[in-house]
Image 1 (spheres, one colour):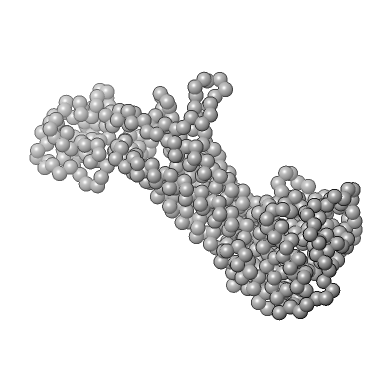
Image 2 (cartoon, one colour):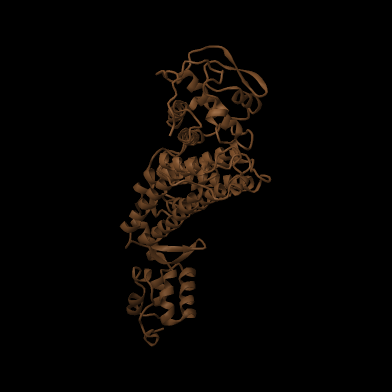
Length: 492
């Protein structure tokens, strides 16, 4: 229970934003720094901008939104224990809501390529929250009064436990709110086609060569089943992110955090997000490794492998329209060539292949970063969370795009499927239990060498038309079992 604070300042109702021009003076433990007067960040953020102006890769905004939950949860716990005056805790919480809602996104400009602990991003958050709180109390920005970035916003915390906690929150929410639902929607669209085409017979292929028949529905059910497995793996790996490092502070011992702080903050985060986050039972594991994050991305990589196979199959099956496999007809979303009129390409499948390649490549960085780090800190956090969020986002978007612009509009070229059935030689497999493997093989070679249909070759080799028609029934060949015809009845 907190006690009333008669000295609490009046909290102003000011919109987000600073109208000031030029520069203002901020300070940190190393001294004074000039920062843009129209920004809320402070000295440590500015130092990072100057020292790590590398490329165009900014720390993902999802990390900062997640940090809003971390800082708000800590403020709630600190206020309840009277370590923070109630008005300060409530004010910090109000600004954290602005962070969570993305209203302060432009105040988080730091690059991915920074300190491996994420300290500069943590301090970016602390400084922005502090200065926004100061603005709302009518104070002087940069004074660090009455809300201090370290003493109040970062109370009981360290970058070493807050940054991995924010990583887990951001990654979990991205996966559960975008990636997994998109995978499930794609899986359901594929399954719908599998059911629709359950009895449409086609020729199967193994080793890129003709094989025995199956139905189009069976082939697509294989894709749906593969996605079932992939989704289960992603869900399992993602659940590993529910254990967070809060409470470990600098090296996992919890120094400067009260007993039970990590548990209480994790409970608040769970209530705020609606996800069952808990504090990790072993903080030394949680801070010294990034194994759970690495495994979570491995789940995405595995899904990317599955999606690559599906997309690659589809673009081959739709190749044509006159000289390819020509089994599938895709929606004509856009012209396919700047020089060849009328050309339409399987662009959604190609985009999926590129996304899958990117995710698979990113997993190498995840693996190397996860294996690195020394002793009580893995200092490769920024590259891991950047790669994870990027992979999760492009997979989600790509699944929705290929579903909407390709899968749901795909049609069958049934004339081509029937032509392939009529020309197939590998249905001779059905004759093998009846006339024997060697005689069946001879019929197959004879058909190929003389450019005959299988039936023509079989009849030429002495198989009766009655027996052939009884045994070689394409739809029947898509089910378990063999022809129930006595071998003695085979007239050869």
